Amino acid sequence: MGRLTSGEVEFPRFSATIASALLIGSASLYGVVLGGHGASVAQAVSARSGFAIEDIKVTGNRQTSELDIFDRIGLDGWTALIGFDAGEARDRIAGLPWIEQVAVRKVYPSTLEVDIVERQAFAVWQQGRQLAVIDAAGQSIAPTAGRRHANLPLVIGQGAAEAGKEFLAVMEKHPELAARAMGYILIAERRWDVRLDNGVTIQLPEDGVDRALRDIVELDRQHGIFSRDIVSVDMRFPDRLILRLTPEAKETRDAALKNRAGASGTGRRT
Image (cartoon, rainbow, N blue to C red):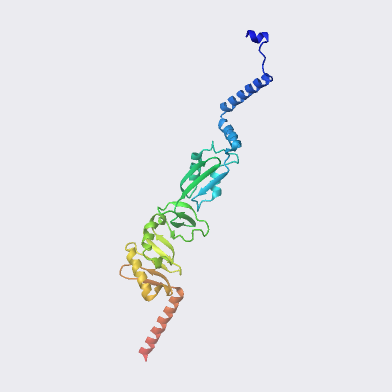
């Protein structure tokens, strides 16, 4: 202190300016920390130091749009890889409809990798006018998207989503019939109807479905019943099969029976 007061010690040039800058800087840093802005400042500094996320690599997505994934990641153009929370991004992406599993990894200095495992589409379920893609457990995944899912089997009716897996496993044993099926309708949550591509409906029994399918396939091989003028094939009764004719075929049949009856009556009178 004696040396300072006597003038023997000289302060560096601009020392007052430097001291003022340090004081202001310290106060600013204290304010940033106290206000909870430390992470934001660190993000900005690290982003401008060469750690900004510049590349996002997405793999495994077929049904999920990359734009939806980017939106859930939530980048703003200056997001730094150092302060980016990969766990929170993973949770946000996991909320998308098709996502079953997702992993988000940071690859320094500027890359983000997103690996996705999507849920497997099993069928399309129709309830009223609503169409939704479902998985094998009958859980709805997402609404149908145009013709993208046109190759999936269509199950219709209350309870059809849950019961579809077991029934379609039986249909797989009869591929020539399944190839012609346009839809499978669950009736009263008890039994199925099969709608073919030519409009014919096969009414299956509640029990013994596999046997009924084998019988109808064999009947078509031998007699070509699906190529006839019929509306439906009723196989609900174990002791008989009922064919319902189209209106035109029914009129033709009724006219033929009437002519035959008339001819028989004329013959008796003579």
